Length: 320
Image (spheres, rainbow, N blue to C red):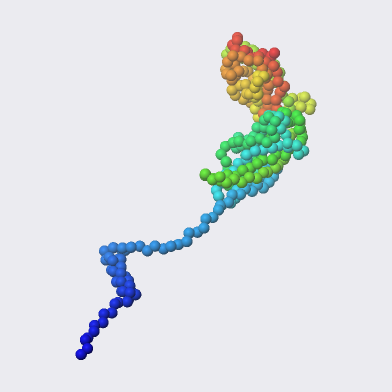
C-alpha cells in the first residue's frame, strides 16, 4: 500500500498583496467616514490654477486748447497725479536766460469751467533766475484727473524793455507720477504763446520825499506821478495797488512797507513803524522805487532814487 502524501501549497504573493490592500481600504472607510455628531470629519482640497500676473500702465496726454491753455488727461490702469515741473521761454526759437527774464514770473492755474481767468493765487509758478534757460516749476499739491491747465507769463521790467510787442513761446514739461508708493512716471510737454505788451501804459515817477510834521509826530511824505508813456499826461490806466520797494547794494528789491497802497493813491504818509524792521533797526543806505501793480498782475516800476534810512531824530528817509 502506498503511503499517502500531503501536498502543501504556498499562497501566491500577488494574491496576498491584493487581500492586504482590500483590508486597508475597508479600515480606511471605517476610520475616515464622517461621524454622526459633526458636519464633516475631513475637508476636500481643490487644486486651482492661479491667474497669471498682469502689468498696469500709466500715460499722459496733453492737448492744446485756446492760447495759454491745455487739457491734461492722465491715463492707464494705475492711479496717478500730475503737475508742471519745468518751463522754458523762447523768442524766435532762441531760449531766454534767467537774466533776460529777471523779474518775470510764469504762473499756472486751472480753468474755471472752460476758460482761463487770471485771478487768485497761482497753483504753481516759476521765477527765472541766473544764466539757465530751463526753470523749475514749484507749488502746491499735484493735480489728478482731467483738467485744463492755464499759463500766464507776467513780464518784468527787463523783458518789457527788451521784447516789447514780441510773442514768446512758453514750453512746459508736465509729469504724471503713480499714486502711493509707485515709481512709474509719464511725461509730456506743451507749448503755447504769450505776448509781451507793446508798450507800458504809463510810467510812475517819484516826486517829493521828505519828513513833515504830523498830528501824531513826524511822518515821512512820499508822492509820485503816473504819466502816460507816450504823451506824458496824467494816465487813467488802472492800477490795482502800489508798492514802495527798497534794496541795498547786495540785495534784491523788497517791499519797504508792511502794507500795500491803494491803486488810486498818488501820495502816502509813512510812519516809522510802518517800515519793515530790517530796514529801520540800524539804518542803511540803498535805493527806493515806487511800483504800480496792474490788474493783470504785471508791475511797472519807477526810476530808483538813492536814499538813506536813519533811525535818528525819530526816523528819517532822505535822498542822497
